[in-house]
Image 1 (tube, rainbow, N blue to C red):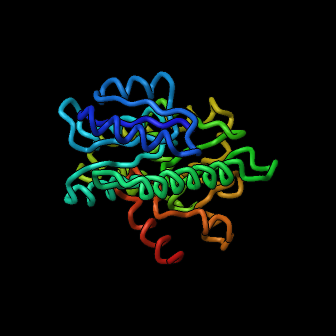
Image 2: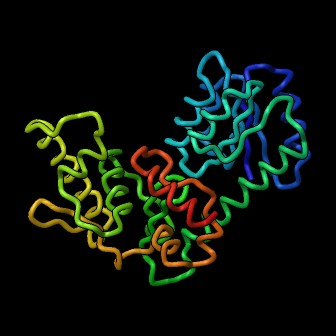
Image 3: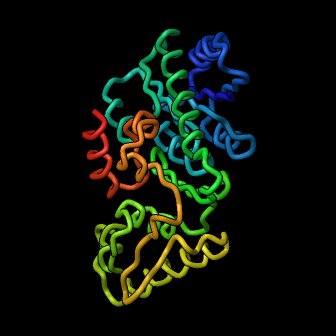
Length: 272
């Protein structure tokens, strides 16, 4: 496991690095006092877990977490702060963990262990353990499409979000207007916006065709849907009562999308 720790206060950073270094689960740890340098490191070398101070001058930890997730969606985020009022923001970011300063070694180990366990379960789900699942769609945590275990890198964020919304609708027919309202919550569906949204749809279809997985999407007479029997999905397994998938759910569902909060609430009610 590779870990980075980011804190603009050098003494606190060194103390945290010493604590992390003592954990047997960690193979490599890097410390940064600059959020920008930490982000460059993640983009170039990646990391499994990022421990981030929230209050930093060049870029706060919440913004840094969002940028790290863009560069490395599977990186687990653990926030560090001396201010309890940041707890809600950390929860809203769907962080894997949250620690108050000064960091307690036992609490740190608990959060690291939880992050590692979550990643292992996510990998198990993604692998699906079933050769026939050439395509697997992961909704727990961040939304990702895996083809033979490798994530698809979408050139259009909105095209990816459109597919995520259709997966959330579980194969139900969705009109252009309904999908637009979900993805562009505060905008009116004008003629110009219709043309813009048609571009998003075309980009999604082109991306799926490029990846040779176009069979998961269908569209007729202005409505679109996902073809559920063409791919595996953790959401569908959960709803189907699969015990391992239910146990793997940690309360994080399609973390980037506000419209996903309703389903997230339903999943939490089902499990807890």
